[in-house]
Image (cartoon, rainbow, N blue to C red):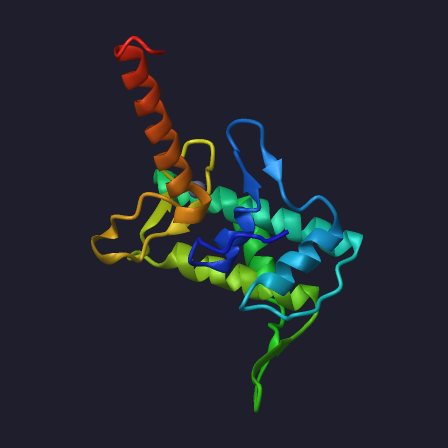
Length: 185
Ligand SMILES: [Zn+2]
């Protein structure tokens, strides 16, 4: 399964592995192997990382702390000390090793280094007063993302993920409405 990396920040992408947060949440990371695949698909992280149960729990705790802090930022609330503690503790560790080779970039490291990189990315985004943090315009999505578009006019986390789905649903609704109006509905 392919994960979506559309938030403009890997920590927000991690938070986005839970969808429909206000309805019936859908968690794409249900076992440690899911996180291994997510890390492998993220451009900024090592291609191979081993995740065991304790590390998986730590990653989920970081994910939820990042989500709550981002939501606080979005709503103009102050950050909860417990969430700050989780993110800052994760960020204090060593980061993945980055090397340039003939084949290009090679990133390696263990899970704590991955969590450290994610925490630092989240901190950079949440500390940036110019960052335009938004929630996706499709109500069921609830993904948070950074809008870096000119004029900050982006409405969806991603066109494939949500924009096209909303437009297609609106189109179907219009067709139904006009069919009803014509007496064919
Ligand atoms: Zn969305």
